[in-house]
Length: 436
Figure 1 (cartoon, rainbow, N blue to C red):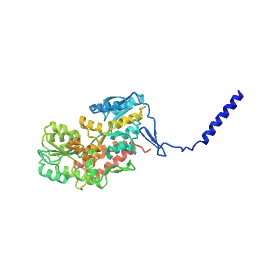
Figure 2 (cartoon, one colour; figure 1 turned 30 degrees about the vertical axis):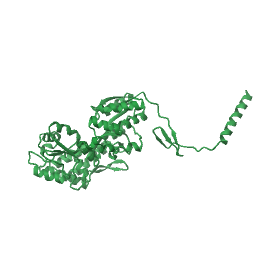
Figure 3 (cartoon, rainbow, N blue to C red; figure 1 turned 135 degrees about the horizontal axis):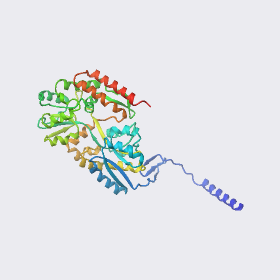
Figure 4 (cartoon, one colour; figure 1 turned 120 degrees about the vertical axis):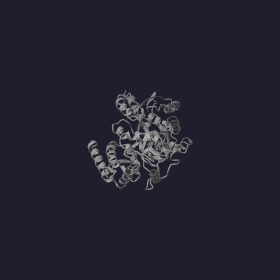
């Protein structure tokens, strides 16, 4: 026994000596992982093992949008051999609620779709996770659409569709879209008589009013180093007040009817336009079909420039695909998100749902370029800003709407109203979102 131990130790020592005398090897540390390769500090590429493939992935899609999802799933399954199941849920309301319930129990989706303005809240609740994709993937999309998928400087999804208000006109009453709001104003003063109107917009609604306020120099939250600063609110600076004054002008001069103020304003505006009594409106792509169904020959363009020469900074909404924080297959879920948003599948989605993809190469594609409405949204999106997606944004809508309604009805001067709005927003933020 003793002799055997001595022989064993001698063998180990010999092996160690041979290793020590062998050629020097430079130690390498993986510094970047891109799909299946790892680049080392010496510049050599090494094959990295992909995580084991799951038997299936589950996707939650928006209601009535799965027609565009099916072909993307089929091609993904063929490419990677992973089965993908899906079900439809209301994106704006049901999706987040269901993820809260099913995620922790392990019965939820691996990939979900959400409007970008919910990202901050769902990240705060721990419902979705940060994803990492290559710069090549990110370069597929417009910069603003990618920004909309970030929270606190980190990426939490990839964009699948975008929407923003545009200029829609009745070609029978206005043959071409004016290039400036000064032209729209001049047309409206001649055309409007109390029964018919040259231009209508829901500017007592902050979603639409931001186009004017932002274009004049106002802002909701200042962006610093890729993150929104909730303490820097620009809704009562000189530009915002100038925007509010411009909005008040249209109401004060009777260019907008009193009936489009308040909660019923949208239906009143739609009714007048679909009856052929309005030459032009500011509205979103969701309005196109009902206008066409009413027999209106519509034209669509990006919003005319403001009196200061700047483009309207309309709010942009971006729908995205996100990876659940509860998935056990983050790598393959991210792969699926990349697949669903690639150029080919983005084009298919537009063809089947008319949802406009923020894929830069498709703006010049005939499928977009030859579609007047889609082209207008794509062009206006270049000047639009994503709605702030931090939870504090929830404290903005109410005070902003109240201020705009008092401005529209002439019950308050723009400066005083916007000062009150900012004061109330800050109070609400301090009350409902205590600093960490």
